[in-house]
Structures are given as structure tokens and as C-alpha cells.
Amino acid sequence: MNRENLSENNLILLKEKLSSGTYSQISRMLNKLHPNDIAHFIESSPPTDREFVWQILDKEIEGEVLNHLPHSLQEYFLETMEASEVVEITKTLEPDEIADIIQRLPGAVIEEVLSSMSSQNRERIEQVLSYPEDTAGGLMNTDVIAVRRSPTLDVVLRYLRMQGNFPNSTDKIFVVARNNKYKGYLNLNQLLISDPALHVEDVYKRDSEAINVNTLDNDVVRSFEKNDWISAPVVDSDNRLLGRITIDDVVNVIREDADESLRQQTGLGEDTFAKTSSATYTRAVWLGLNLITAFAAAFVIDVFRETIDKVVTLAVLMPIVASMGGVAATQTLTIMVRGFALDQINKTNIRWLITRETIVGLGNGLIWALVVSVVTTLWFQDLIIAQIIAIAMVINLLVAVISGVSIPLLLRYLKLDPGIGGTVIVTTITDITGFMSFLGLASIYLR
Image (cartoon, rainbow, N blue to C red; front, side, top):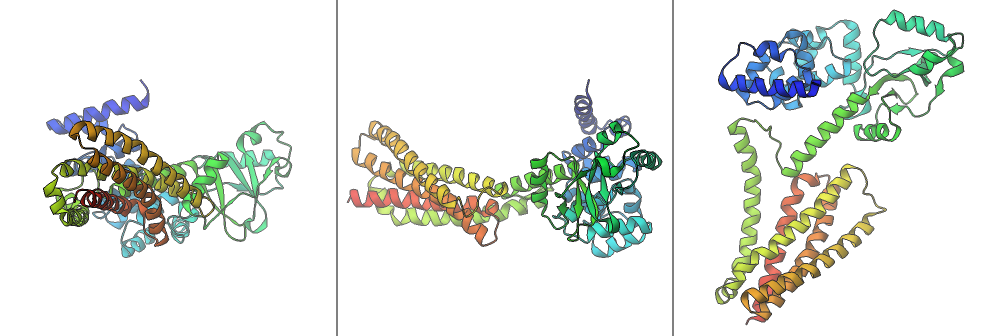
């Protein structure tokens, strides 16, 4: 049985024992799991179980588990720790991982944690902390292996043996010149198969694609994807080697961005197992906003109250127009948000997107207008209402796709996240447009 299946079975067993109150084997089972599995178990447990699991963790793996937890849970557990305890549990982590964790602490506590460290570790972590979290500098690890160009490969091999252990995800050795200026890299496999009498100068690969320390994390991700890197050097504006970024750092960025995008699209930032009071408050805010937009749509309906009173059929058919428009707008909005996230949308292709979506909206409007008009005619035996709903359907689907493109563009121009408020806005527009077009046409035709 592989580790993944074994861990999954153990996690299920742990949950059963927690729910049944049988704690005798929990500690032994839990501490045998991989830290990432333990973090997943904590994240997928209710608050009381989280507390219990954290208390029975072995101290030597607490730091690794904490590193795999989402930021909200890191903050939750860190707020009860003394500075000395934070130093103790994070001592086995890489500097970039420690920096990421202690940033969840208040400023005064960060200073206390740093002052409790050795001067070497403090200097490394302060270097990472000096850069914004969402840049290459905030992601990088300062623990690198670098050599000059003049030594022989035999000397380099002996130097590596003296190091004892390589930093995680080491696939290359960086080559530097005087003042630590980055020149290129030497692949480990090239080092092992080459003649030991050769010099680094003879075999290393000259490289001009180092990552600048101020590069945004999403651009770092794209560079790793483009070049199939396992690790990459980070340099300053003078091309001095500062550290390196590894594939596990990139995976963390992808995971965090995906999680954040999902939360924004749903309008919720809450933890799956958040406390009842917290979940109630978070959702109440968005429900309140939705209620305001619902009243706006209700006001439009009320304007045409007399028309609805005369023809009750209109009340039956109203939701169809609004619903179709809402779905069409959300489809376009999702495409736009995804395009923004992948950095695919820019000034050169906006016009093409607007044109394409307009044609799509018009095409779908005509197709479904025909379908709905036929169904309406067969259902209510009323050709006039069938014509009215067909025209309203075309209008609303056309407005839906246009708003699905324009609203996220407008929100982005205003430096607002289109994933958070976009859905509420476009569905409100399509509801109001659907009701006004359908009931407005009905009031004209059915006088």
C-alpha cells in the first residue's frame, strides 16, 4: 500500500477515534503521518478537535505541520505561543518558511522572536522579511550552494561532501564571480559525470535568466512553468546572488492563489470549519448586499404591477428570462476572471473578447428565444406573450454577456477584485434588465 492510501486510511481511522472518544492510539498514529497529512487533518476538523490534535503533536514536527497549514490557522495557533516556543518549533524550517510563519505575528512579537535566534539565522530571516511577501524576495531561501569558476570539479565534489547535507530541492550549484555576482549554474548530474580534472569554468552553463528579487510571485510561477525549473536563482539589481526559489515554494503560491480565488468567487473568506458566530457574520454581510439588489429587482417588478395583475401568465414566465440572463452573465464573468488570473487579458485582445461575447450572446439569445417561444405557445396558447418573451430573452442574454465582460474590466480599472463583487453586480443587472424588458414589452403589447 502506498503512502497516500495509508495516510488516507489513517486519517479516516483518526476521525473515527476522535468522534468516538477513543484517544489511546491517536497520538502514536498521528505522529507517524507526514506533516502535510497532519495539517490536512487539522484543517478538516472542527475547532475542538483541532485544539486536541495540536496538543498531542510531537514538538519536533510542530514546525513542519504549522508550515503546511493555511495562514488563518497559522495565526490561530501562533497567538497562544511564546516567542521562545516559536523559535523552538521553527528551528528545522528553511529561512523563507520561518519568515512566512512569523509574519503572522504582531510586530513586537516578531522582534522578540528574532532576538531569540542566533545571529546567522536572524540575519537570513531579516533579509527575507525585508521584501514584500508576494515577491521573489519574500519567497526566496537564502540557503544556497555557490562556487567560483576557477576550482576543479574534484575540489567542488570534496567541498560538497564537507557540507554533509544539501538544501532541499537542490538540482544545481550556482556559479558566482567576485562580489557574489551571478554567472550561471552547474547541474549536479553534469558535475557527477564530468572529468574531475576539469574546471567549473569548462562545464558550467552561463545563465541570464535569474529572477530579480522584486519580481511578483505570479510572474515567478509563470517563469517556473515556462522553463520547467526545479530551482532558480534570485538576484538584486546588480546581479548579486541573494538566494534561490524552489518548486515547493511555487506550488505553495499556486495553492494559496487557487484557494483565494475560490473564496473570492464565492464571496466568502471563511474557514470550512469556522466558528458558528464567525460564519454567521461573514455570510450576513454578503446576504445583506444580495438583499439590497433583490429589493432593486422587486422595485422594477412593482412598477409593472398593473400589467402583471391583468395577465397572470407573466408572473409565471418572469423567472425564466432573469435566470437565463444570470447564468449567461456568470459564464462570461468566470471566463474573464480566469483570464485575469492567468494574465491572458490585455489591451490587445479586449476588443476581440467583447466582439466574441456579443456574438455569443446574440447567438444564444436567438436560439433560446426560439425554444422558449415555442414552449410558451404550446403551454399557454398565446402567440403575443411568446413573442414578448422571445424578444426579452434576446435582449437579456445580449446585456448579460456584455456586462459579464465590462463589469470585471471596470472593477479591475478601479483596482477592485472582480471575483468578489462581480457576480452580485452582473446578476443584478440581468435581473433588472430581464424584468424591465419582459414586463415593459408586455405593458406596451397588452394595453
